[in-house]
Image (tube, rainbow, N blue to C red; front, side):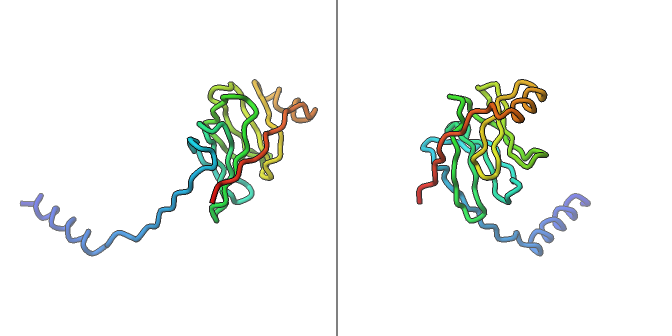
Length: 139
């Protein structure tokens, strides 16, 4: 008896509180066959993502303008991304065995780190290779 009363209460509450309307937008990455794998907010208020299949780091504005920057390591498969304390976006290379870095302007060189000490010294010395030219989303 008590169980049916609880069930009727729950059904009644569902009828009183309708589900909110939600709009979902999906945006294709510029690289054919690409795969947005991880996403993180950047210091520039854009959303940054790792394109694991496209071997690129992408930037998407809240107006859905998407640009991708190819990762210099061939077949690296970037798989994670996060904003670092230096204001740059840091990402992991699943197959490249590297940690990469890109600034919000997208023009920063890649950092190949095997240790935190290596990252700091290479960054200071400017010994990092450049990213490839960006790919823009087709409209």
